[in-house]
Image 1 (cartoon, rainbow, N blue to C red):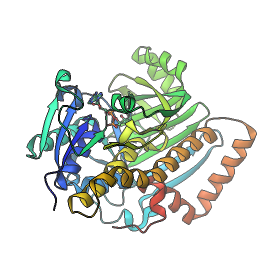
Image 2 (spheres, rainbow, N blue to C red):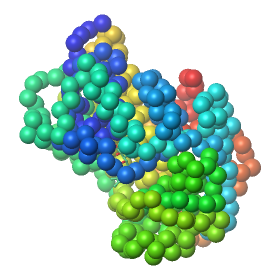
Image 3 (cartoon, rainbow, N blue to C red):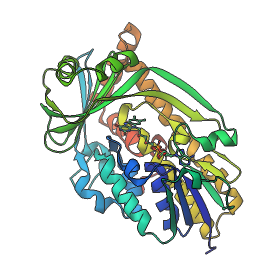
Image 4 (tube, helix red, strand yellow):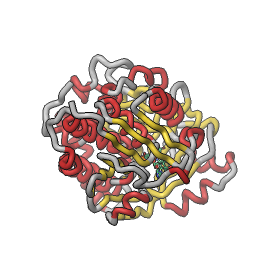
Length: 390
Ligand SMILES: Cc1cc2nc3c(=O)[nH]c(=O)nc-3n(C[C@H](O)[C@H](O)[C@H](O)COP(=O)(O)OP(=O)(O)OC[C@H]3O[C@@H](n4cnc5c(N)ncnc54)[C@H](O)[C@@H]3O)c2cc1C
């Protein structure tokens, strides 16, 4: 084994923090930089829907079991078209052996709050002797202070690293934005998630344990800005108008927060000894909960290539290209699928309505098609081509 190989990871968000642990786990020494201090890295009020591809990476890094108490599994997922009054139910059995024998039964996915995730990642980062943390000290982040073997740019969608390298990006803003809020809600089981398609945009209802739920409400940006500024009682009224009658929201658990959504794709995934990961490389609409799972699939592929270098099976100079070649398909297809879903389901035009009726009827009547689509969303579309490795 060649050592020591040294990497600098820029950005300690969920992608960069996991990338640092992943590289250290295959024998690299890692420096992890972020201008934010730990308390600010922990402070985001959001929850992520995790898929089986994320479970695989977290298991490989021995993080899955320590997170078990904070992971809220959902065994059922209802896809509902509220315009057509049609629904397609999915459950863990649609994933076949991918989902079997897991804690929480045959889960379709899990919901995890940002804070416990980052608490565990920061604890592991601090405890790992191969990792040097440089957090909360912007002056100390000097990009090329000491030469390293690999730079991992994980500094988010506005990435200074990507800009400094001169890598442009394609950007397609949606007229929709997204509002996330946690609520107490009746009308849904604790192991049930919903993707509701409304003409103004998709609306996800994700379980957080008991009657607590995370709502991810997509709608025109102006409308969400207005909703964000309402007092809690007026916001609850608007929410009741947007949700089907079966749901009753009893209380808000945090302040609603709207954020812009866009499809973004870097024009290159690597340059020199720098590779892009996570939202530095791509960003998609939150429909189907793909965002962070796609970011973590970057990390999983990077870890494999870094391990090959550490074992002498891949030249150091080839790691960037080897990584980029393996990421194009998954990233492009995931961005394309989420974009198509938003366009197809967020309108009332006769042609898309007819197409939706057909797609939903096929999904309901053809279990193999249902299995295929759920696996594509859960493992990544490219994994359908290769054999499931578990
Ligand atoms: C407001 C908002 C709400 C969201 N809500 C949800 C949600 O409810 N559910 C969900 O699944 N997804 C949500 N997302 C998307 C989700 O947060 C992203 O998929 C995820 O954060 C991507 O992680 P990342 O580590 O790639 O990037 P980021 O989380 O953006 O991390 C980038 C890191 O880089 C650091 N950085 C910046 N500049 C530098 C520099 N020069 N050097 C070093 N480090 C630097 C930043 O401080 C930051 O810590 C939301 C996104 C936003 C913006």
